[in-house]
Image (cartoon, rainbow, N blue to C red):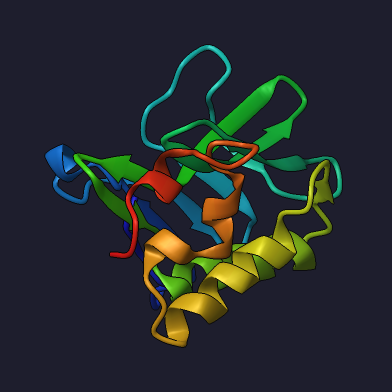
Length: 154
């Protein structure tokens, strides 16, 4: 999901990383109210308020690192880094930093380290580093030998 940084209305728009989705917005975080609102909804995937009752965690698989936000029985998943056709795509630095700032300021509880890796990702990209070597990429393919390490130097 590529993303759009905080905009004038105080909204962080998170965009799909999958090129087939043409940058469609997958979720919005209202910085004024703290409501994280996913575009696609299911029984459990619904808008939720990010606050001290919300739990946040990084999740990973061989092709994706994401952010899971849960509050009660509601949850929202945001892809942070994905591999598509050999290309590694990730959220922009400004969006990663905005998400980290909101999670921290609203007191969301981290079940795994979330805020520091989001900020490290933003710092890495702002320093000119590629998404493939982002600190968030370390969570993919646990134990090494994951998809990112097989891509070599990009």
